[in-house]
Length: 144
Figure: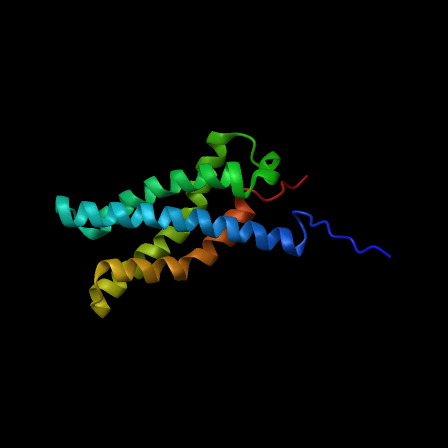
C-alpha cells in the first residue's frame, strides 16, 4: 500500500507553506520599512511616524508584487488584474498598517521605547492579522 505524498495548495501543508512564504516576504518588507524609517528619521530629520508611513508605502508595493508572483502564485486567478489587486492589497493592509502605527507610536510615546524597538514589536503583533486579512480579501476565492 502506497501512502500519498502529494500536498495540495489547499491542504494543511499548502497553507503552512504559503504562510511561510508570506512571512519571508513580510520579513523582507519589514527590513525595507525599517531601513527607510531609520534613514529618514536619523539622517533627514523626518518625524519617525512620517518616516514609517513612507517606509510602509514602499514596503507594501514590494510585498504585494512578491506575494503576487511567489507566495500566492497558485491563487493568481483570484487576483488577475495587477492594478486592482494592488489597490485591494493597499486597502487590506491599511487596517494592519494603522494598527502597526498605533503600536509604534504608543510604545514610543507612552512607554518610552526607542522607535526602532517599537517598530519591531509592532510588526510582530500586526503581521498575523495582516496575513489573515490579505489572504481573504486579496487572494481569496470570489463568490458566485
